[in-house]
Length: 495
Image (cartoon, rainbow, N blue to C red):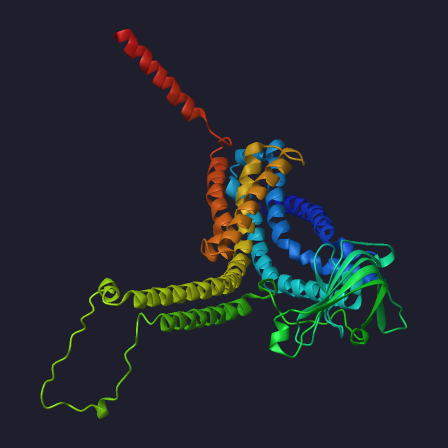
């Protein structure tokens, strides 16, 4: 039996590592393709690009590893079934579960390693990759400019946002259709510069980068001291053929590309940090909602809170005094008791109060939604770390019996079946994750839903493979249909 376990394990490991290497290369090229334009041609050097790819590889494990387990298990057991090796095992009294024993131990160990990877390695690589991209953008300003959107020049003495339609030339130094928003010391955009073309000129010996703009316009909002003049919104406008902006980058000369910044996203946190942040975020959100609710209630005045009275200062009256009852029974009686001009004032004031409160609620709604979305993303990330480890185990019990049922090895049909199942698993996870972040479903359900859907499928396939049944059994349906037609024919003959 030990020889058989070694044989099965060796064949599985061969398919596992082969599939993992092929898939990781495919996913690397697919992922790098999204931002290779921001890295290549910027004078970064192969070492920096190699570090970026090295940090990027662990972030692909959550996609590559489940697909690798699924594909390798289908390939291994499909080849065994195709070569009648399973038939020989069963003839010798070895069941499917017994043949899978060594692989079950390996997959359980793989689940533990996967959890360790998701908890420690992936968050660290996400942080390293984020900081490397941010520091590259500081050292190479051209890399910080993204086509079609406003980009910040971080770390410079001059705060500005730059938008260009196109970058081209050596190191993307030439720019088309440049729009610049310059900021004041109060971080307010009061200057707009537009130019048809631009050029970034820099030198390794200089701490100044020159942004040379050509054929453009300059707009600046003038803020006078008098309030009456400010209401007129005065501004200055000028045209230019060539306009040069000097950007001081002396603060960036000593920038370390490996410098770690603060952890900002849920993907950069391990289980301990996520649990701690989830508790603090929940308490903070409850405080925000409670404070906002009290503010709205106080503004409405609909639910006044009786002030607490010190019982030591109470004076017990010797005689009972009559308490006058409130004569106002409802709002209609109160309105009808007023004169017409008073009614208009009351209704107008109430309308203004309601409009003001609704505006405040709508403005606060976006803030609270973003807070709870951030909170839900932390819960989702916490459960996804556990779900990823369990998914590798469950997908093995989907792929192994499926390979034994389809009885086909190689990279043809098994690859197609594995990709279809993985796409179903992956897209269910994506949609469930998005719903969980928006608060439509609980984040725990969003993380576990694709794994829980694959669980009954794995149980069903394992039972069918153990009983030597096909992938889909239509025999009993056909037998029922035949029996139904026979019964109808017999009833027709009796009549």
